[in-house]
Length: 364
Image (cartoon, rainbow, N blue to C red; front, side, top):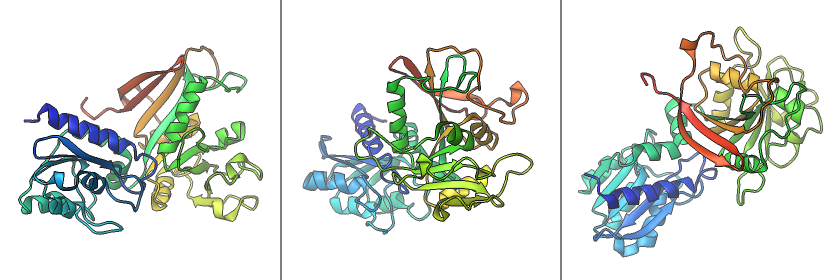
């Protein structure tokens, strides 16, 4: 039975893991708390950057000899392989811990097996403590391993009646400065920020992260099927961060920097590009998480492709009554086909409401 101390320690490990969001890709985010033989916390750490020490190593270094006979609480099964760092399972064995609680099993076949190694060494090892919380914080990496594509978070800003722009196409600004600042936090957590040609043409966005200390700039991706929206001098082509312009295989790209072009097949039986091919190409470039920032047409294509893993909507206390809605055609023709969502969080951001939801599990 899980004790209050067990839950407290693992919840702390989950919070530590979240500190690595945006800086560990293509590796997972992981947190670890070590307690001594009496159950007192003596060390903690998180995976801070790809290629750097893992969470267990940071925590064990802080704990030093006090880890002997104690417990390690880890959000992901300790790894069992040697890459740029050594296996964490071995580090825990050498530290002399008596028990390991880990939340989520490692689905990566290259690294799994750590739990079996720990048990073989006589360490009491158990999976599942706060698994849902640990899954949520590590959703991007887990999705990328399990599905072989990046995790996609669709973000939009709208009025209470669901409009993302007025009838004359003006949209700046629907939401508050506080909400716009919060979006930069989402960008900082993502490997790539993705928009469509409509957004590129209307807003000339720069898509960089601002106001987040120490942030790694994400890859900027524009889906510009006909190579007509991104022109020389576009802000997305500046030197803030790398950029990819995804275009159709037969598009004229003479005006685009050669290194910024990603050619992809067109969508079968429809406008735009093949979303599955786009995500596969990004995954091959070590992109594990995508922040989809619009617009409605591109969001509809992702929903139709079954490629939206979470939705973050910023709703402003504003009414327009006309203008484009947040989501365009997503291939849904009847209420029984609606994409049902489970709301996981609602938060006030300045005067706005931020709603986070994930696709409901089948059968819910």
